[in-house]
Length: 144
Image 1 (spheres, rainbow, N blue to C red):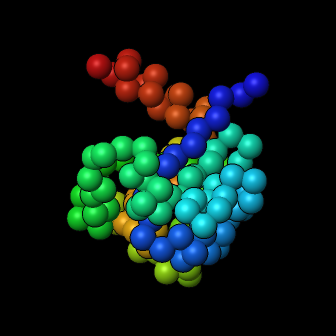
Image 2: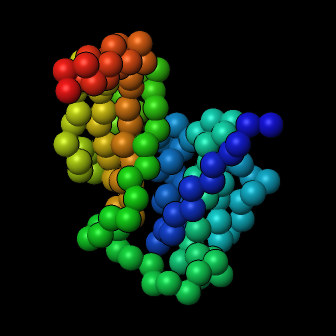
């Protein structure tokens, strides 16, 4: 079985967050969702668990930071094409997300943009031509 990732995110308004992630392209798994949490599925291996603050506090006593002010993680999703990056970021913007809170990256063989969800969590979206990236990285190593 492939390893799965469940990114847990504290959210202030669960319904708003579910609607946002559905607009970006995730689907809600009702089997692992209730009125305190929602499992949003991006792929067979990538899931975002949206947790109300009360639910979050069941897992840790650490304070919940305001992600509009501080950043602890940058979450990155891959896309199959450059256009896919722009499409996903565009969907986030149409759903009320803040676009490009981090600089756009365009290295030719790799392209990335980002968005913030309604709670300020930053998601990077990237595409990479793996073969071109390998060539570019080998060239950098030979130059050093």
